[in-house]
Image 1 (spheres, rainbow, N blue to C red):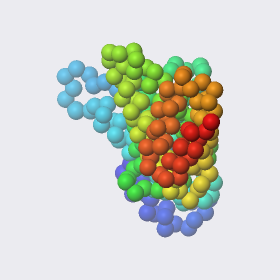
Image 2 (tube, helix red, strand yellow):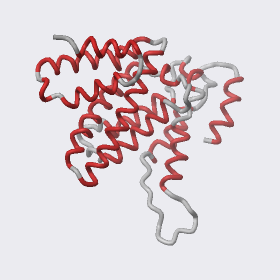
Image 3 (spheres, rainbow, N blue to C red):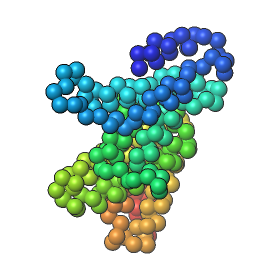
Length: 239
């Protein structure tokens, strides 16, 4: 991370050419294999190295998006796109991979939150590619539904699923609000309008079995954006 911070000003003032762009892909490829951190300190460890410290250090590299706008001008991969894909793999694993547990998915959702909202007034979300918006919407809906249903298991697993469902709802609401303010209206359409359209169709066909869909629509409504609220009411009140 310190290297990224030190190099960023130099690349910002250097001659802007495709050959002189910030080496985002090189840095990402060097650290991405370590995600998620799999580390437990040995007994009687005297160095104070913990999984939490390693995770924080790794996340500071994967969420460094300061130079993304300059890199995107040359159609190069941005850190936001690369890291979002990495985190989303935990929420939508390929069929041949094991499905991560709720705590691993919670970690991924929290990483996505840090990536997309590094600061209160950050505009990082506005830079999101449409492809990422589609995957993010799908991943959060699936993860939210699985976690919501998993709460019924009770015990420790039920508690973990509740934490995951709550975190999904918080991120969904924040994204819906931010994308409503974004100049790129296509992102709002992908993340809010299209899911609402699909969810309202399910409610019309089988309202009694769509508790998770109603909960997800409530997350979008809770964003506080007037356009999103009107869309939720319009879709939800359709005959």
